[in-house]
Amino acid sequence: MRDIALMYDSARRQSPFVEEFRSLLRYSELIRQLILRSIKTRYKRSILGIAWTMINPLLTMAVLTLVFSRLFQFPTRTYALHVLSGLLIWNFFAQTSLAAMGEMMWSGSLLGRIYVPKTAFAVGALGTGLVNLVLAVIPYLVISLLLGVIPPATLLLLPVPVLFTGLFTLGVGLALSSMVLYFQDIQPTYEILLAAWFYLTPVIYPVGLLPAGLAALLKWNPMFHYVELFRSTVLTGSLPGLASLTAQGLFGLAVFVLGWWIFTRRARDYAYQI
Amino acid sequence: MLIKSDQPVEKAVRSRAAAMVALEGVSVRYRLPIERVPTFKEFAIRWFQRRLSYRDLWALREVSFEVEPGEILGVVGPNGAGKSTLLKVIARVLHPSQGRVVTRGSIAPILELGGGFHPELTGRENVYLFGSLLGRTRSEMDAGFEEVVDFAELWDFIDAPLRTYSSGMQARLAFAVATAEFADVILVDEVLAVGDLRFQEKCLHRMNGYSDQGATILFVSHNPGTIERMCERALWLSNGTVKDLGSSDRVINAYTSALA
Image (cartoon, helix red, strand yellow):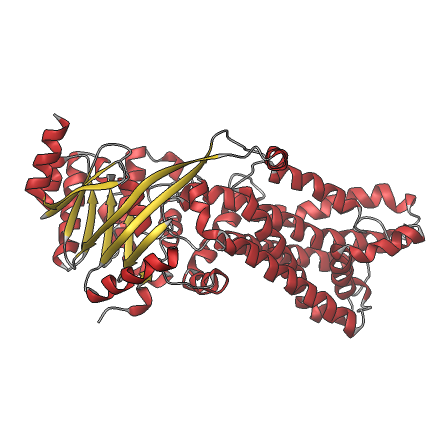
């Protein structure tokens, strides 16, 4: 008579990799609630509220354009959009991977008390990042039109770079979250690493500015490809070839699978660490 | 070694499939570093020098028992006897280091509560956040919302941020959410100590109601009187092992005279 799906047997040998997917599906409402919580609490006490999501990159863009468009001898309009598009996708990656770790630490006290599929926190962080990204793309398009640059038709393909970058980001976030319960210094270390990574990726400067030797090394930086892919859909319209596109998608998927594996392999022990 | 000991366990569990909760030789080991290694840098240095050493702490050792459908089992024992660990290993929070845990049906853990709340969100928003942490769907929570607030008696404050609540109000809200749904197995850990006497009575009443509907309850309490009143059987835990298991009158008597 009893619902057999609800039977729990600690001795049943199941792949944690697969089991976590199933468990997460049953907790889909939790993911929705985590996203709502992050978005509601982030700006709860500020007057401008959710508008900050859009204003923040715009201000950065304005400052950078003022300072650097002269320096790099770049036409102001193109440079402003170059910076803003780069910042949108970079911030999505940086904030989401950091938030995945932060959520995991927030959940720490809970993990020792109730059963929750632990990937929900990183997946919730990804969802929050996606909402913020969508909210920031809207003012980007407005600015683009105001500057007289009509976005290319490739804009319709925007979900493609977002999906690829999202998979990569979730993989990185999961791998970091699996360590953060064990070592407190992972988060500050990663923040320093992110700052260096930011300057090694052509977000605020054009690729052409780099000397040939350094430019050749860029292909080993995955974020370089994802930033360029995002930029090509919203700004330049020059998509990479199908082979390159496939490679970028497969790489994102591989990083996600690896992160999921690293995280779920030890997920059962996390409650012992609290 | 592990595989060998698994074989007879499987048979034993299958032969009495009716039990709602079955533990067979369950041990839980916490591995504590002798010196705390909080940073990755230090961990790497020590690992390299082979200076990482651990001390094993067995919170439970070879615990075996079964809980029949509809039973209320009381659990007593001094602090550090492993009572909370026992509930956690049944609630699937901790995976047993050895042995096997089998449970049937839905499980509602009512452990130390409140960790799932966010101070900046309103009471209403927190009801949904906490409910989803307990694995509930939105339609379940919509359907049960009014009863949660009725039970917590918090209609006047439900749209105020949680940081404005007193600790008693937070505890009431948490208990109301945690117990909102009937569950086949309910794990209660000392939470009835929160709130005033009238609220405690209300909580016990709700537990009894679920018991009448056929719920199986594991009940941890420091109050031997409550256990004698509510439970037919009681389990006495001491240093992580089962010291006694039987009719609650007898076990509680033995437990209280051992304390004296």
